Image 1 (cartoon, one colour):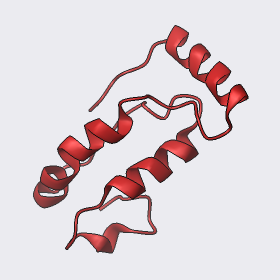
Image 2 (spheres, helix red, strand yellow; image 1 turned 30 degrees about the horizontal axis):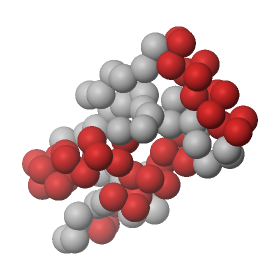
Image 3 (cartoon, one colour; image 1 turned 90 degrees about the vertical axis):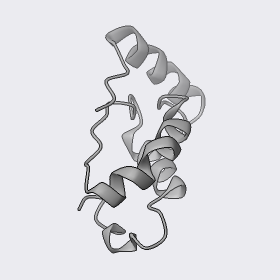
Image 4 (tube, one colour; image 1 turned 180 degrees about the vertical axis):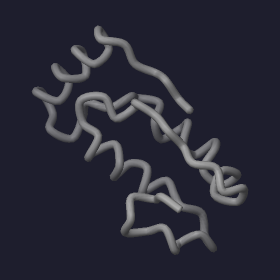
Length: 82
């Protein structure tokens, strides 16, 4: 579980999204997912996070770009859930 945001952070993310409709999620999302997706997919661990902040749809696209790792494509199209 990645609990990364507070009310102030979400408010700032809303401002970011107003400036750029593709922004508004945690800036370290891709790096953090890159670090854990392979082992989580291999071990069947679900990832829970609030790093989507003001733009969970754009954040989901970022996670989809990072993974799932090869060999774990059966989760595509269902939000990456197993």
